[in-house]
Image (cartoon, rainbow, N blue to C red; front, side):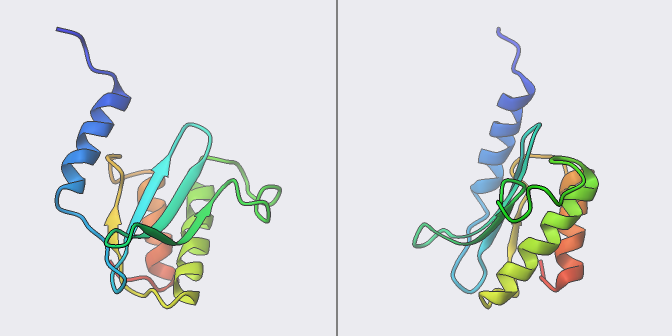
Length: 121
């Protein structure tokens, strides 16, 4: 039996979560992903398969202004910016999809910053 890597186990957890999580136009799914280098957030309408708003550390406007590309301070900034962009599009309530990652560290900091900026989940 082959040992499963951390990334394979994360994908299994994410697939298990996605069985129950689904976004709509009124309540889109806030999908969070982080790699070793960057953090990404998308607001997705799963019924139509459209991304309604997004933010990441790769945004050209943010590239030089962030304290890093994948740390807790950056996650707080990205969470706040993502929430502001969602609120500008009229999104106030979301379903939080942590992407199989544990809810601590960067993911928790991002979620807390989005809540403070006005999103409800």
